[in-house]
Image 1 (cartoon, one colour):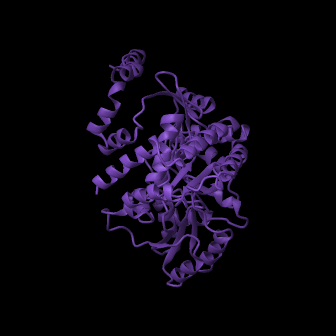
Image 2: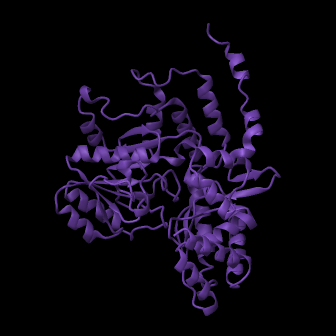
Image 3: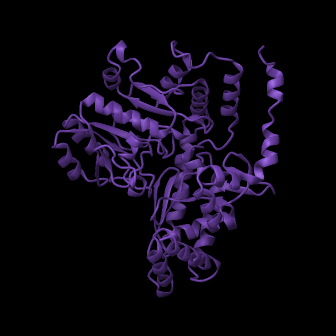
Length: 468
């Protein structure tokens, strides 16, 4: 006999479960999930107990407000719990749609594809998967099949995901180590046209995959390089894949970051993260019709590439709502305007602080790089940190930003003295003021050359040496 749905719903109380077991969160994770994550969080003092979130803010049990300058690695472009996206999820659940029938064509994927493609003139079709790495895997497969070639080029220090195919085009050795053998792909320096030309002359290259701005370090190729690379690739019948998983959906002040450079039209574009407002995993691979028509060349090949949960109703509804919010609330424009303001105010501090080397980026994707100071007093501490492990000074900045000013940020990558800011795209001038004031306070402290911040640095040095 079928269960009474009202009784079934009432028998599960999620709020009560969290209230009962929530205090065990770090212990549970250490016991049943990644054992190093809680250890790392305890070590750097990031083991907070956040109770709720709204927009660009977190709140702890005491009601203290934290500014989120990380956005879940870029997922929460609209902040957390945007009411329009929340409503869309509730609506699609209430409609009791016959989702993922497999042998029908639901309207929602077509509607979202239509809306998404309107932001990418020259691209014609979309494959919906469940994540950024899956969007990259799709692009790699499609490029290989469409060109009949097997080798894909990628840039040093790139990050395209951690599944086996995307790991093969991941330019960070720390992620690749121990997972060999991978696919026979080849790295080139970002921005090096000569290296690209040499590889293309071998005649076996299917595509170049590139982030218009690399997430690791917030590094961009020189102006005009992307357009020139595209011309070279097409001359050799190879494809340009732009990985916009982090840079896309408004992050850099254009809907896609490649659109900052006139004349660039990728053959395939990967998107994810911000597309569903943070509610439901979703990935999208946009491409030209001829590529999709080669992959899906006959009815026999109708399911040659698919995803079990791809294009599910919740993800599609969230995506439609997200794009509506971005249009109605002018989110991309806000990312450009507020991002320019934040970057310019931070860049103005470079001449003031000798430990601050450069501020770069576009829109609300900003890199703050630290460098070797000139004064002997500061150089001694800097040298000790570098000898122990590169990246420790940036960590020395990130920790007091959270502990002292309740602002969450991240070091941009392993062994990098760069902090990356990728906040929700809805932050305001008030949030810019808060971050710049906090960052100035931390820099003032760091340039004293002594105190709690440098005490913490010595602790990091000991831990780094002890872990060798």
